[in-house]
Image (tube, helix red, strand yellow):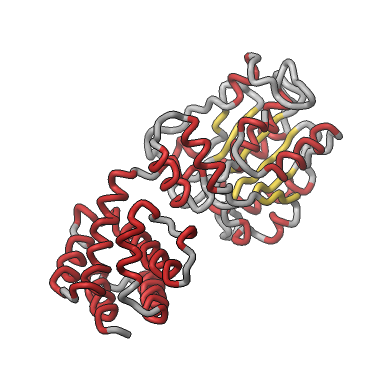
Length: 348
């Protein structure tokens, strides 16, 4: 039932109309940012077809078919063979293909094409979800090309749903064969209310997660607030050293800690936290305190805002983004971080 899904009410209405008029496209691209619920929406459409007791064209969520539909057992190992096939849920008419590392394997797509030509075993249609569809290999004789003919002329009893957070990277020939439904980021208030409803978060934590989520319920649920606050404290000290104490030793020590082997997986997150703090300082200078992400440390943010000019904040954000781009050519992160912090301290 779509009611249980958070946000994107316009998508719910579109899908309800499609279901009631029996006009669900056989080739459908669900596009939108990570974690906004695209796969859950796709599964709800599939469940509406396999449900034994649909209500107003939607799944009942109670019958045996509904309960089995979304239960997948995904590979627990990194064996390539386990990703070269369609992974079916406990319902034999709902399957998915998922990437192996950074690519969806051609053998998995070939098996999907074969399975799509079989008639349904239990329901009135079969459904195949291609998750992270942007990872279809675009080399010659690849998974993407193997899929084209089936997308263009899908079997009458099979539906293929592509799910992607980067639809523009898909082959134009694939996009042109699919009807696209676009998902918007979820309103932070809706995310906050959902988190409070789980009874696992305090009001402050729920609001902070909602503000950090960038409209993604998946991101909100993945954030470890303990680690986040620890990283934020380190980045806050960087800004305080730049603006309040002018202590370059703190900057160099922080750069070293960020690049320590034990912290290498947290490096990108630390940069993102730093950017968010700088942005918060900027919006406070502009008088938009309600837009601050780190609202729970607003006094510290306001103190920093009193000691910096807006153009310097803009310069810092530009330098961080420039460093990110340089990482694509394998520059030394430790040297780059030292240089970044020293340039930020120089006042330019």
